[in-house]
Length: 91
Ligand SMILES: [Ca+2]
Image (cartoon, rainbow, N blue to C red; front, side):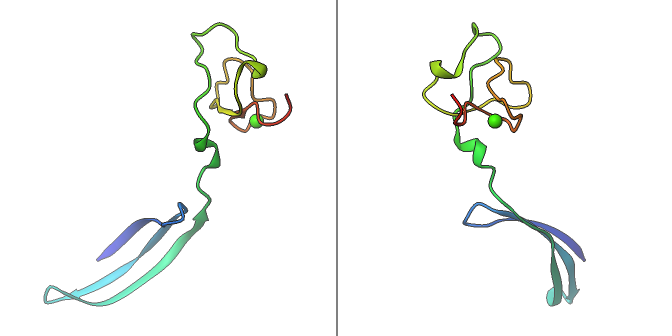
């Protein structure tokens, strides 16, 4: 039996493992599981609050208390370096 396992570790990183279980008589008698992808750091941007939506009047960084998550659309042009987080430090 071939399996793929998504592992969410206690520190917030994610791993993907896959491998083969050998089952005989309803009992797992052997398992060969290996790591497929290295740990992916938990998306730090998700700890920021979501930025203003496109429907609001124009918002600039001084109007906000700190960094915000803007996503790829960035309707208020708050993300100068395009990494998905607006108003990081340079305002
Ligand atoms: Ca940015």
